[in-house]
Image (cartoon, rainbow, N blue to C red; front, side):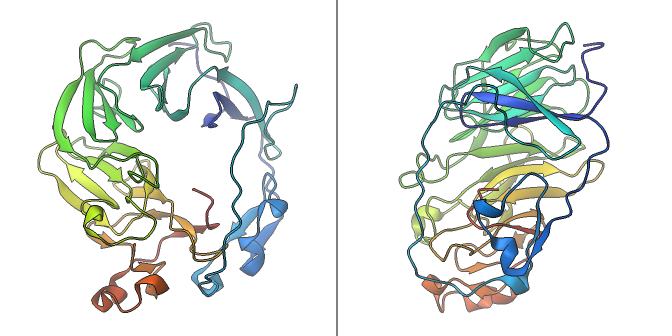
Length: 342
């Protein structure tokens, strides 16, 4: 939509409450001088603040621990009046939209519309800012049928004139006919050949989110699927903890990379053919182990789960299993604080 874009870069962030915010770069961002390294980089919430940076290396990893972890269950509280999440100097944050049920994924259409996936409500909504005031003045339900815990969505083919909106349900991939500017799907969902092992809550059906992305040339589709468990290697984990490669019609399913506990985000680095992922690692090895990570993804690459972590570090719960894999575990590019659900 002409004139609907801000003069400053704007980023959207979802929160698991029913709101999400827009974050704008208002000027030259000021880099906070705090860089935490070594043990201090592991830290906890008491050392967190907007702009604090952490550098975690393989050499910083502590020994595995069997000590019980502190369990901090989430609970919902009302947002105090006139308060917003804090951001680093040079950024501005505003409430963009509210009233959603578990908004888990956002995607901007070529025309500037924002698609919001409400996973628990099994709906996909479209937000449109038609008067360019920085707030959506129109919200429509794009789709609400044939959705089963939807998470990732992607336009196809890549570029400025997509023909479909692809949706990664927890048990497979569907697509809706779409043209730029549509506020409603142009037709019913089309189910593709791609089949995924479904998930529910972590303790039951395992990780349920599925992320989806297309290669820049549009020839291949990639879908991530998390493990069923924290650290099991039984038969129930077959075809889990992987990133799959498909043709755009869902055919020719292949394992692109494996040993990835839960790649909850995958994307191609802009301007390249490099696939990247953000991964939630396992629990119950200590407060600071193992780190979550963000990394490029190598075709055929093995990232350790469940037998190893962050290179050839063996999970003590899997001692002696698969020694032939020890030298094949890829060390991720960027380590993130353990249990941060990166």
